[in-house]
Figure 1: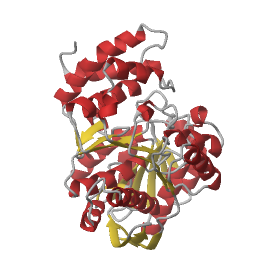
Figure 2: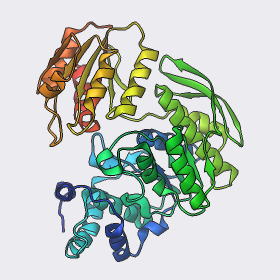
Figure 3: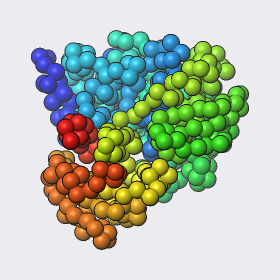
Figure 4: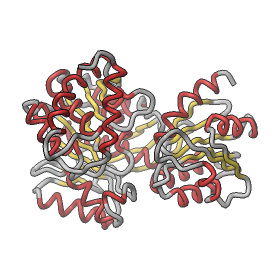
Length: 434
């Protein structure tokens, strides 16, 4: 039995040695030993390449405004491991994390003695979340984010009231497949018999896979029926209107910037309106308006300082970088832009560097303490920008970038979410004394 929080978290992280093992047999085995706590969880299941966390955040805030207790299971975390499991936006306590680890540890040890092998870190934390929401903290609804893919994701033993796919792009191709159809087929694996599916996917090849899976499961599919109208960028956010098959919403505002965030918000509103119309939750327009506006998602186009203007964004794949570049162009046209970038070596960073270089006045590269992090020198060599430098120490690289620019310039720190989780608190503290 673990005596301290640190012991518990160290044990959870030790499961990383088991790597990624797609499949549901280990999860089903653990749930059987715990008397199926996941069957007591009322959940909405969300998959997608990008936008899952933001979409969940929009839904959570609106449901909270309507007076509901909302649980969430998301990944990865930015500052504290406890963020993975939260209630009404607040991470569970260290004491609760310790309690859950002591519940799961003997079960994981038992599983390790079977032919199935030991559970991965993600399977352990998923089992903890199911036990927490199924036995310990009965929320009105749990917003459940997949970790990777859909069909064989650890979360896919859930029996939800609604399923959602935010977007589909090229990420984790070594596991999900190299064709967009293969990736879409994996994501669509969360569709359950008779359970409605909502998606903002527009790629025809990907959408066809979702349609086929929905038809196979006799699941109502909502796509292309909640258009965004009159979208206008604001100084610190976006304004838009939208329609659903049931309602028309005017003058919706969000504080997160970018067209992709408008699409995420629209998908969230569609889901909330579906819940309202089907009398699953009592949600009024005022709840939607207020909940959307107060939603933020740390590490996603987050401005951590006003002067100098420093933005951190965990754009870690092609689609994320494309959205980031588009947002920078819309909101900071004519500004001098400095970019600090770090990435994992198994990502397609050549493309990401090229796109970022197209809007940057200077490019800066670094690395961080993570087994799969690309060396700064390697990223530097992949860049064709005329004004570039690198430093293997990210704190030094950040300070050099800030000191080399002017007060009214824009400073963007982007790349791997693991990188952002390290850099973000340092940026906030450093800039508060700047």
